[in-house]
Length: 233
Image (cartoon, rainbow, N blue to C red; front, side, top):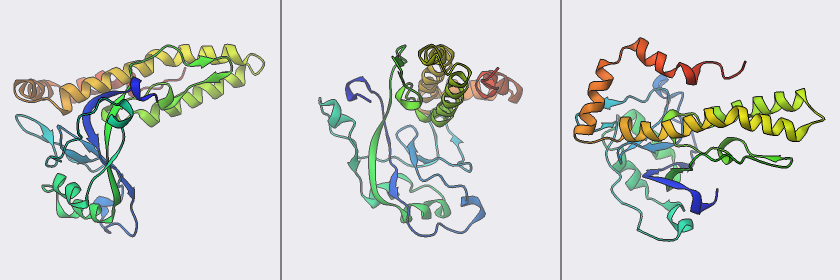
C-alpha cells in the first residue's frame, strides 16, 4: 500500500517474527495466535482465549508499552517497523497471567508496527487486473475480518469468472460491484469499534459500558447478523 494513503489509528501492533521451540503445554494455550495487538495503548494477545476486562476508563488485559515512535513527516518512515526489546514486550504484558506471559519468552526479533487502514476506494479494476483482500480494502483488526473478507473476495471472484470465462472484464466489474459496499462497511465499522469500544476513556468509556450492559445477547447477535450471515446468494 502507498504509505501516503495509509491512515494510522495511532496505535502499535508488536508481532514476533519467529516463535521457535515448543509453547507451554497447557490446554488454555493450544490455540495461540503469535501476534499482539494494542488495546487503549495497551498490548493484548489475541487468541480464542483472550479475556477482556472492563473498567471505567478502558477495556484491557495488559499494561502499556510506553515507548512511542518518534514524530516524523516522512510517510515511509512513519509506518516502518521499529525494533523493540524483549523487556519492552514483557513490560507491556506485566499484568498478564504467567502461563500466557510464558509465550513471550519464545519470541525473537520483536518489532513495533503502526496499525493502519485506508479509506474505502471505488477503483479495484484496471482492465484484466483486479484487487482483492487487503490490496482492495485494508482494515483495522477490531472486527477480525481482514482474512475473512479476502476469502469472500476469492469465492466471489472464482464464481463470477467461472460463470463468464469469455467475458473476464465484465466479471471483474461485477465482482467489484458485489463486494464494494460490504467491505467498505467492515472497514469503517472496524474503525468505529476501535474508537468507541476498544479505546474510549473517561465519560466516553462510561457511555460504552452503559451501552454494553443494556444490550442483550439477542440484540448483540441481531446487530451482527449482516456480518456473520452468508455473504453469498
